[in-house]
Amino acid sequence: MSTPAYPSPRPSASAASLAWPAALALAAAMGIGRFAFTPVWPLMAQESGLSLAQGGWMASANYAGYLLGALAAIVWPVRRLRVTLAVSLAAVAALTLAMPMLNSVAGWSVLRLAAGYASASAFICVVAWRPVPAGDPR
Image (cartoon, rainbow, N blue to C red; front, side, top):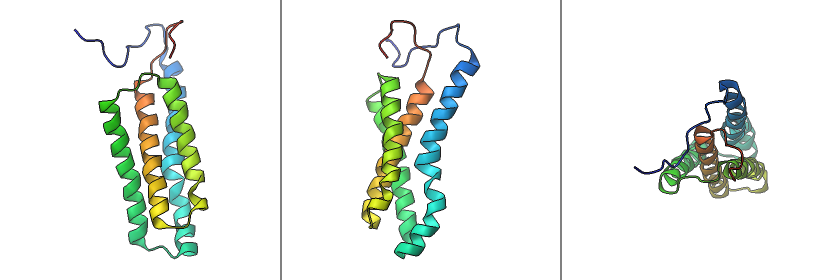
């Protein structure tokens, strides 16, 4: 029998001790990576003269990044969940903050693609997150 990619939880872990950190990580990954873009879209559209179609391309790039991130987790299961989660959350924030530094739909689409990938990676880490036994290097 093969060893699962993601170990099972400790029996002593309470549901709340798992739920709160997971909820906060998901709020950061999804809130910043996805929903922070929504309220700034009208301002971006007004100041840059973006069309609805261009906004659709940027949103599609974000969803494509989610898909690529999820597919990557199938091919390369995450082994170091805490490190990957931290890097993914930092990437989501940095990529979202980088949006005002560019002034092209192509550049913004690349950032949205990468942010989607990082958000999916963070989501996968949260879903796979289990309490770690003492001495485990994760």
